[in-house]
Image (cartoon, rainbow, N blue to C red):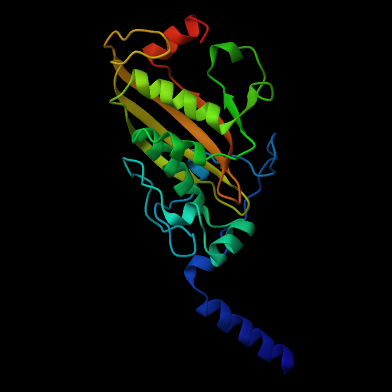
Length: 244
């Protein structure tokens, strides 16, 4: 009789639980080479959310937002329930908003906002398309860099392309499964090389670059690793040739 009552009570609780707290299907992930056991998401293994609920859960809208979303208070000061969900490996919508915040900082040329997105001790950057990494293994292309360095690099790029705008082919999307904290984005930038930066004068060539980047966002809502696959602007090519 007691066992039957427990089963009935459990079923009632599950039926009445809010959808935002439901557990996603478990997915087996390979171990990541840096700091975490969660594997990066793929296009075919991503969540279908695009907005954040009060608990940091994701809605069922597709990720087809063309522009970065402005930062929200939850990405810098999550409430108690959001913190619990982050520690449990959920709150994927909050992790996505951190990546939106980064791209929004680039789009609005807000360098402090960009710097604020990263772990204070630095972030691992793996630029797999860099010419200097052509013959290097995946493990060897990672570099731990300070947030201020990343902000300065963005400032130099934006000085060369003052009208640069960030757009999405596929906006930030967190991978499925508990403790999969990788956020994927397919972005592109438009504008023109119209400003002098890094000692290189502009030639007026159009800015037409794109990339697919994944961001490892930790439970403190800081980016601690980036893996970049991208094309280069004319200014970047000239900077590389000059050893910048």
